[in-house]
Length: 292
Image (tube, rainbow, N blue to C red; front, side, top):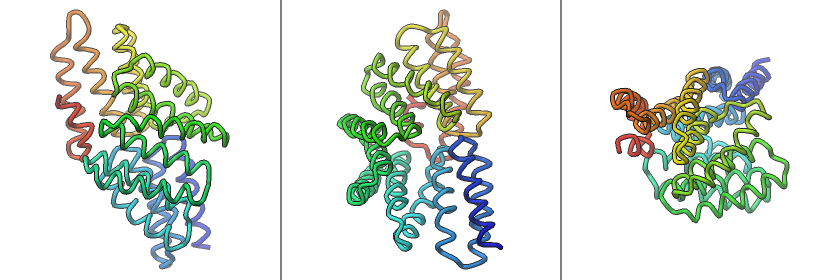
């Protein structure tokens, strides 16, 4: 029963994706798509194509993410799945932002939010507010924190613990930390890491732990920041998430520069390693920070 096999492969991939095991999730999704394409069934193709977009998005591969998410938006619209259409638009927006393409990013994120508001599906609305808030904060428009606040309220209201985890981390790492409020950033990231432990997920965990290390570094806790950044790097290497690994390396470099005496050579090697990951994958937004 090939259609059913494709669906089973998709759900196996989705479970690994949610747990933060991106390589395994991508492999299952790829096999699911191949079967669905053999059957020429667009409805069957749509979920694993969407999953491939999601997984490449999380791994920090914005070019591949844009490719699959743009396809997903068309497929989900065609089959009338407005929930996944809205979410795919949100992730497409953030992927464009990662590439430094902010007009396209804002357009896609706003499109997803409009759909989510029309269908009044709370988890989707929380997700789309989060993606739009991320895009704004990455651009330096910290009105995005208001979108994240609204998204957090909706996620908590709907009992969506996973989304609550991601939004707390987003508010800390991509909101308050960028805005220069390291104390608020640390508070948000502590909540996020506690929720990640409760959920048992490694979804973005290496990157979020790196941002927590950065917040501790700003508080003057250099030894702790070094330890946290090394722990974040280990998590990122184990989970195979390129974005997480690059951010952990950059944070480690920052911490090595801050210690007394500074380890200039070690810092240089760490940051060059981050650049070597970010440059070929098109992580323009992260690459700018690493080069600085």
